[in-house]
Image 1 (cartoon, rainbow, N blue to C red):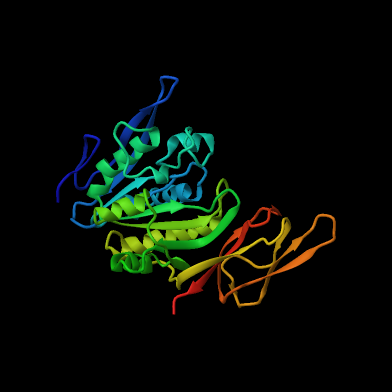
Image 2: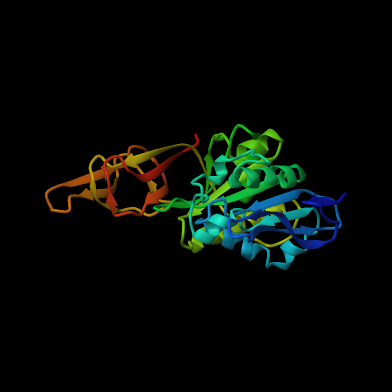
Length: 315
């Protein structure tokens, strides 16, 4: 069982250390550092990577990792290693924004470039310093500024290890989600590393159901991998093969009549669109039998807006 080295900083078996991924200078001559917490057992085992804050306004994952790294069983694994980055996108977190200051999405900057933009350099450092040393990882996200996602794990069903890890995590919903170009998940897969994406809640606010599901899922996965030993609540997952959206056929005011995570039948009423002047009311019906994965929380919507995300269970 060898050393783990991050940015020239060595962490030996049995050590717990916080190191720095790299420093990124700002125009003010100040430098932003990205802290990395590493918890190592003396016994050889898998290396699990936990990361949040890819988008600066996605705070649920940050809280999940914060709570995990305060637990003694996580900070003292019985075998293997846990590497945790609570906030990878420090700059966007400071501004409470999804994008980097130049408008780029950090999760479209992979595999990155040593001499590229800020996002490209962060992505490059992550791919160079962290990803080669891990076995598995969880990348925590939320819905956007108006979409609240029901707690879910996204993976590629055709990749057996992805599905195996997702079943061990056992989020309420496991969604078949193809790789997207220039994302951490896809670039890590090219190096033989399995990264799952956890989605829960919406940006810029805590969703405690999603936070608790994320914590329990990580602990279940750690126990499955033999990293910790803990008594944990069981969870039943539903596998979602395909998804579709209920979209607004007209602009107006949106009222959702169902809760996130609810099963709905084809043709069942899921919401209503109203004209502000009282002239038009349009009933919204589910186009399929499925589970509600996400809901648009904006009451004022425009024609074509995505309103309710519905997942179809794997047969």
